[in-house]
Image 1 (tube, rainbow, N blue to C red):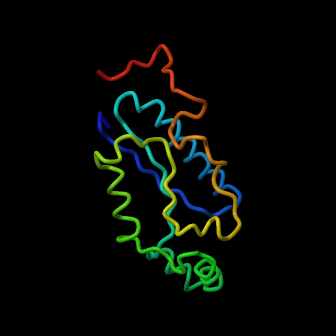
Image 2: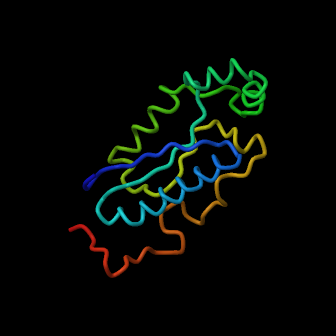
Length: 146
């Protein structure tokens, strides 16, 4: 990746065991990469989607009660559409208009994770930027892009 590149990870909103640990790791990777790679113009994002895909449709066929509860408790009253509800916002992340965003999580889930009473991935930051404790100061070994 070079200057102007983006890294977009996909996370999920499920809250169980090793899967959750892996998703927290993706969150940490996205934030830290935003800090370390931002100096080179590379931006990073974690997207937590909730949409109908072949995999979710297969899951719905096996466990309709789980998906029916999810849909019923989602304030928008439906699952997202992978192309229209997720595709556009994800493509927007790669545009110049989103050029100041990095190291952050984008929830494209109809707020279902909050509606189900599950905790969000991490407590909200004062700022959704990659800098967790105030202004980012590059370590001496990191050179800013010219």
